[in-house]
Length: 150
Image 1: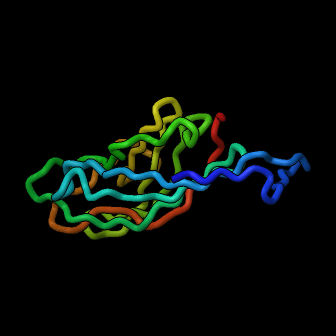
Image 2 (image 1 turned 180 degrees about the vertical axis):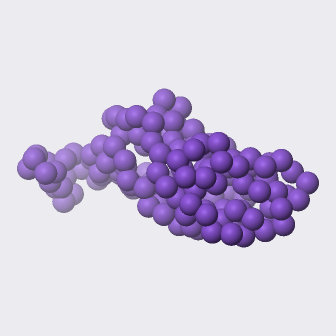
Image 3 (image 1 turned 90 degrees about the vertical axis):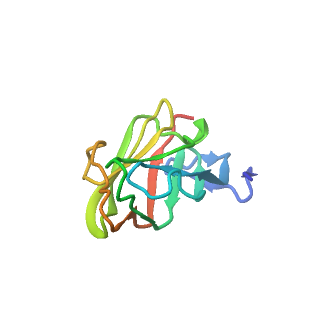
């Protein structure tokens, strides 16, 4: 449930103008990936805050069993980010990931026009697949900050 506070208390941006909007919400989705034993995963709930046009998305640590018979693939959110929380342009950031139970530098990608979210097992390449071997796949909790268009 979104909570909208207007001027309670007034928030200031760097220009000294009063911001009118503070929203605290959650985004519920499942993770789809053929490299996971259960796809889609159980529902994941991520915290979202929006102050003016600044969006703060908090990811929880997620570690899911690999599918030894599946196909190596990237992870995707089955529910895109709502329009109000989408970045003003395509967004990518490094993300600490787990690939076959090994720590790797992965990345997260958000498409501005659709809100599609992809998590990759390689740094800044939206195509880095997670392994189907016996170890777990996932990512460490992280906080992402970006600017929305609205």
